[in-house]
Image (tube, rainbow, N blue to C red; front, side, top):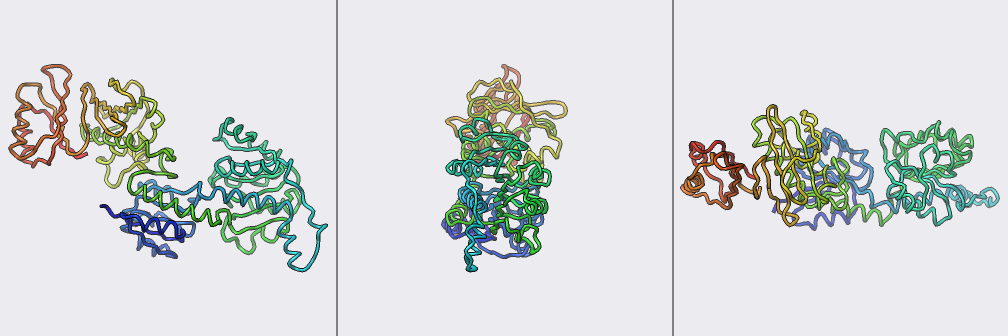
Length: 530
């Protein structure tokens, strides 16, 4: 049994550690508080690294982690991980976006209520022995317009809770359909409309160049006078100086802030100390339930990824790795085998790849299938690790273009995966299927129609279609003690050339291969292990 080494460099909670240590094929080491230099020294030999926000995973750490295949972020944000470097090195970066969704949605509502009813300031006066009841008259949420920027998991949970308070909800998200919005009971609008019409604006988008300072001097100017702004997502979403100025002027009535551009915020942070701001120290995911779920989920995801049984919530795969990703993996493995065969059978470097996926099941899996095909194709071509994560990047870097096509293969099967690769002066078609949903079969190689199990030791032979070849090959292999498990042969027409795929039980010695190559009837011979 393979033993996977996992290093946990932040406190992820007891539930995840227990799951990791309970796994028979995992060695889990917990070393928190490491400096960057310490982590560079410690990481070689580990297949997985699990972090929270305390560890910054740099390119240097990734380079030192020569055995790394997966980095697990216990939480949602991956700002502390060099995802580009990880992708180039073929390291999967995964997070747990759903585990803290309820906690963050509830924190959003708490901030909304606290800013509206002056909860923190009123508490402070009571703690100081004062009774300022008239000073803290608030407003109600009922009937107000809430604008949700980002309508993913958390945004939808906030909408449901706001609806229970009797609020009207607008949402902006360019990746969400009108149908999804209608089902949630919200109105989908553009960002300008949301800023113009909302009484409350709450942010639920990731940090990116497109969302940096989405709350700016200009966007605040377009909002209603007396708007309330809530941020329990990412500090980079707000121009903090611009918001502070708007809070002082009264343009923004109040703000509820859980996250900051720099954490912890410096003492001279422009929002700290303003009387109309409710602050919390990044508590969005800080509930017992969320911490338990985040810990358990990242441990489960890392174990499954190491075992190759499933990949979920990967942020740097070139395709969506959702909850049903396990169903795509057999097709990716099939495509990978096609890629390996195409590489070894091509007489010169492959320049262009065309992929066709035909059938209800595989048509929705074109992107993961393409990643599998490229991983197989490039593995023999390039030094270093090539996998589903970095194969598309490496293909682009080496000038190999990939496109979808129709009518590539003539084989007539349900859920057919076929590809045509081109080199400088030629091309070859290959097509495969899965029998019973899990048994890979090679069913076409250019004009040859076959039924080949592309697994284990495979002797591929192109020979003149003349009598005695099968007997000669069997006799030669038998002389060296090599048993033939299966022989599949295809030919275009009698008397031309035949293509054989021969599954072997043992690897033939070099003398056996040379003896076969010396036979006049054999045109080409290739031994592969798939």
